[in-house]
Amino acid sequence: MKRVALVTGASRGIGKAIALRLAADGHGVAVNYTANAEAADRVVDEIRAGGGTAIAVRADVGDSAAVADMFETVEDTLGRVEVLVNNAGITRDGLLLRMGPDDWNSVIETNLTSVYLCTRAAMRSMVRARWGRVISVSSISGISGNPGQANYAASKAGIIGFSKSIAREVGSRGITVNVVAPGFIETDMTEGLGDETARLVAEQAALARLGRPEEVAAAVGYLASDDAAYVTGQTLVVDGGLAL
Ligand code: NAP
Image (cartoon, rainbow, N blue to C red; front, side):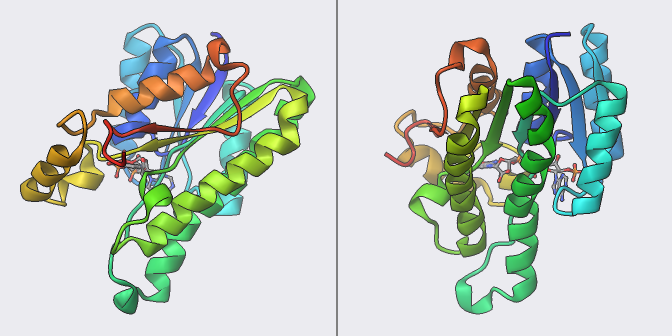
């Protein structure tokens, strides 16, 4: 086993693809989820069937006590987290005048407070080891904004500012902190938007199609690798040229 990686929200979609990718690259992987235990177990089974090492670990990443328990479980079973991928995220879309405090708070907690909690929990051992990789999944919504997604875009822009700050704090300790910003990727999150939206988005992308979870996972795999040792504080956009 090369390194110990923790991927939040890895039971489905982009997080699942990241977990499989990091496992294929030789890392032991903790597969975090919050509700879908069966889906998380299937990801673990797939990794183990391929000869890899994995565990599933339940935690609501917006909850500080749950995050502390999750890190304890991972450290006790796999070892200290060396590669942290903050991927878990939700949407609660709506125009501002209809966006209530619950819609605002739940998205900020799950998408942004989680990044603060998990990165902080991982940082002590990374600093001690003088090596670490933190990679967080933002979105082009956090760069360009998107009507109906003020809460989501704020959380995703927050991830970018947070990551640049931490990159500057811990760079001298051999820890890199980067962001991947996907465009429109085919997952459960985007399925509900409908075929017409998907067609219009595909038309706008320079590559004239939607993205696949594996294509985001490849960018994360690169940032976690030794090839990216001199890359920090960056946001790598993986959107097929959608936001150009
Ligand atoms: P998805 O298919 O809806 O999967 C979401 C994952 O996050 C699931 O594994 C879910 O676990 C987990 N999760 C949700 N709330 C959680 C919580 N409070 N604690 C722990 N885990 C939680 O989403 P996706 O499309 O793969 O998106 C993954 C990330 O990419 C998100 O941050 C999203 O904002 C970002 N992104 C996606 C797109 C896109 O087009 N799909 C574009 C840009 C950015 P359960 O299975 O247990 O519910």
